[in-house]
Length: 492
Image (cartoon, rainbow, N blue to C red; front, side):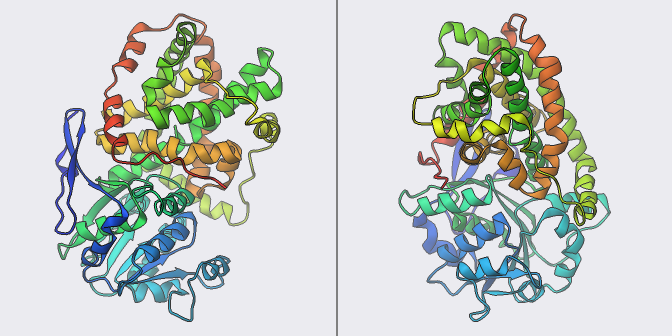
């Protein structure tokens, strides 16, 4: 796979570099706090940044931007809807009406030069017109997700002319964006990687504004994508290896291990605890290939059988999800759900038998070092590689592939699942992700139970195993790992 022109960019403010990837190189910007003195130049023409919304991303990004821009003349303000329940929390974190850093969302949008729209996807679909109508002439629209573009294309709409449209998309949940930013005060460069996109650039300043935004969030490295590529990879990833597939996998494995005779706690440790703990840590620190390499020969054989059995069923599901995201089906489902959820909130998923063991399992941590379970690892790694291969076939750049399929999982989401459990994450993530996990998690669970687990009783496919050991993703991950200090996110 060769690098595509959309990934090359230049900056008048920051010094870029190239990252080796399979088939060529990609332009990236390495972040760090030593770049903060350049932010005023990057935001040339921006006197006020309005962050609309106080969800997980809004809460994190507003605080990071404010802290990074301290000492400049650029004000960061938060805009909320009238009577928002989030206002008290925003005030508690230093945004107030008295100093003009907290106000009505319409007023903040109307008085800001960069308007970052971080309300929920479905809410943005329903209310973007109100916000667009009040924008200052030449104001830049900022997004952290391409969902709105997908919606606008499906209804024949577009962004308003004369306005820059940029995106900076952190490859992790909002809490990770803030926590790793705070850790960056001690270890320069700690943070969550981000992609950026320039969709419209009427004044020629969009690239540097996007890069400045990413640097201010604390991103260790920033790579270029497009809004279309971003929302496809992001929404597919939520429904697959980042959340939906993990939910389906651990439910299927817990049942599998119970039927094989394990007690409930052991079955939980071999399924959920293994994925979120030793498997995730191994991938984060040493890469995907290390998961298999560190097993004994006998356990490698178990891994190989599980990997061979799970790869194709997982790949088929990822391809189906991708098609439904690309043609708008999945996006329309999210928008339609907004009407139902106004009167019928989603029920939690934590009532299934396996989640009753979570507290007992967490209490046992520290008693021993839990080893990687080779069967669980084979199924999980096969699913991750299936998503990687689907993204590569669809033309996504390597930076996007490894961040959306691996780094976001092992450095942001799985650590939170380890601290809280997978069910907690499914019940407390964004509405778009919750809907996707509820729709596709059971599909993955069924595929594992009905196809992969029976197939795992057969010998491994040597061609599939060889393809894994030689996979180009290992080189791409090695290159990406060089751009970020080794920092494990702290989850309090």
